[in-house]
Image 1 (cartoon, rainbow, N blue to C red):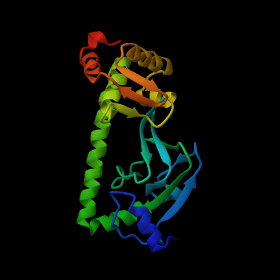
Image 2: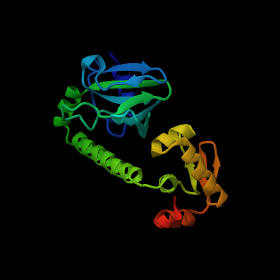
Image 3: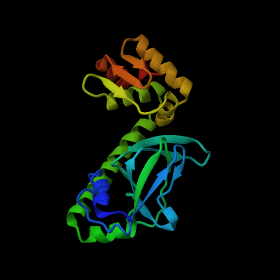
Image 4: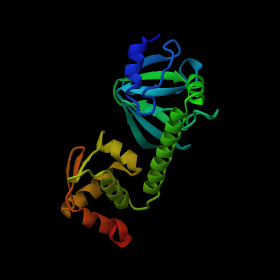
Length: 224
């Protein structure tokens, strides 16, 4: 059982759950070690998971065992939302990349609160819409046939003001995120650096010539 003050503090981390009143007797917290797999059915109870500390990697695993890193979730983000109103199991695999604390909220409890709270219902719809848009962009990226195209699309999509791109994870994680081999990723990053289009230092990238990257992206004959 969580004290109401502590529970409110944890819920305030989430734009979706902020200002929501939940019974402390119904929720629970659990700490996972780095590398542990996380479920949305703790102790057999279908639940929403709110990350209050740490980071979780979201993978899609094919029948042949190949996995693709779809997303990374950090403090304030939730999982188990898309199947909140259905009986479907979560289709992704969740793995902690660092020690992670999760606040579990039974889906039945959240459904009851949402039925009486129109604002929360609208927030839920907004979160689902954002997740759909995110997945559409991921599908667009992963359906690109060219490795260079995927790398360029990633750099342009995540470039901040000033051209800085930060990826939380190793180069191997980035390759998995893009659905390409580690060797292919290194080759394309090296080629783009040789062209003077980007600079690369570990997991920090700097887009120097965005126009050149766009030209390479939108003219397939220039990619490989």
